[in-house]
Length: 183
Ligand SMILES: [Zn+2]
Image (tube, rainbow, N blue to C red; front, top):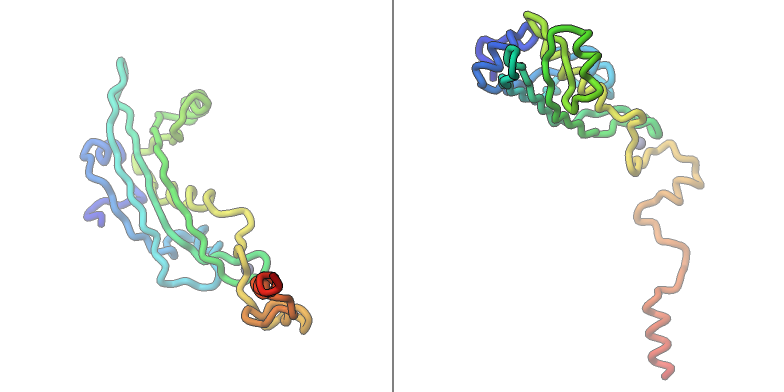
């Protein structure tokens, strides 16, 4: 839990230099854009995330600020087939390197495996966490197998009965047993 660090106005160079990771539990309602993607109201949901920073020396320049962001959560999204809630796991595991301005970010983005972000004196790290979670959302959330609902038509309901007996079909071993007996 962060003591005095405001994750929305973070002094990144100081954070990276201190080397003390941030472990946060952020209520989903503090991430308004993400909260809109959730199935139904979910006032108790919290997002567990972690950030660690480090300074990496660069010859002939000031140290680079790097931040590693991790989050693992499961959110109820709306299944696009049955419109019910579908628990969806989201995971973030991403390194960022901070650069001085947008031009450098554009110029170096292609040759960088890490993501580049533009440094700000009071950096909103929470917004980055939210952006990443939004990008991690599946385009079409859907159950692998939708739970049964009472809205099936009569015919479909019969087919969907989980413990309904299949129409009389000889048991494979019954036929085998008969074969053995006939020898
Ligand atoms: Zn479904």
